[in-house]
Image 1 (cartoon, rainbow, N blue to C red):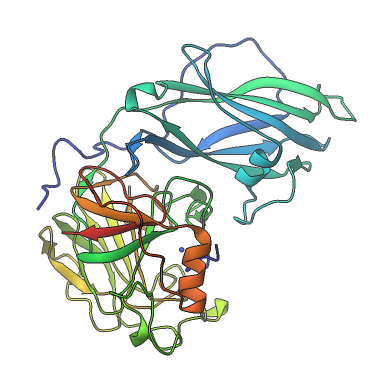
Image 2: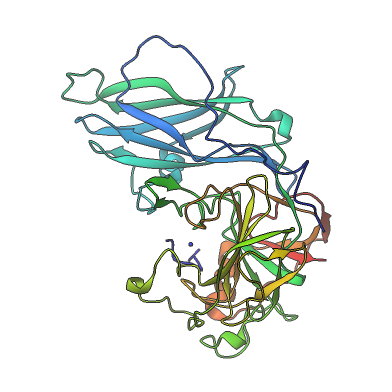
Length: 401
């Protein structure tokens, strides 16, 4: 699927349901004997916990950073994700599946599983479980590779060892209202079925790597005839979602706001030389909900943002109108939850919506035909399903109350 955004992209806000006291990724303690490990690894980002998706499965989503620290070139062969307590293998990545999960630090997909000397790769991991109880409390990663087998090695050999243990929290994801209302909203670039644009949108901000968009969703809307747009595809007014009100997902304080950028012409992206950390997401609002939880709303119409810096807002309060400002190629709302006020320099965290109804789930080809050819979505052959306290998943077609 071609991404919409080029990669650079009444519920009380306290007590149960929020990720109070976010901390760096919790690392399972162990005291193994000394071992030579030419490829070193660490978990990217902060605390990880299962979140329930609209399919009823519970997902643990995170990234593993691997670096070949030796002069000998390396090749990743297999990565097993194991339950630290039972040694159960919960996921195995090898061959094409491993390559598909890899990204370089410029967020681009890679052609193979090689690691040159001093080179790094990010492994995008989405582990699905039938229930939160099935998710391990502690994870370890068992790596098989061809790499330097000792400090003096000059040729790669088979190596196999554990690295980057991780504790999995049992915190409850923040419970939020939807930032939108009504029918026909499609979740684009969402969790948790693969490695879409948001999962690869790792940024370098303030001297660190961040995946703020780990659980982000781009919301686009179809009209009553199931079309994303009707008329000139280069006119923002042709798009069904354009101008839709956007609402605060929970009570909070406005800590960032921008409202002065023009809409982009659909189908085009701005000159990359004009993109900054401040303007990449266009006109936008960031809300601080307390307890280390922030929400981010991006790509508003110019002049439509109706809240100011420092303002206290209530859940469901209008923030602005859906537009096409910033680094975007079609009108949509970019929404995410995160641990800090910097949209590209915070850790993305899972969230669940209080209530929504799914009417169908489309696929990549159906969405591309709707966005690039103006083809109507196929009529759903399934039945509508109401959801509470779940995360909308990629390509869900949703009605919000």
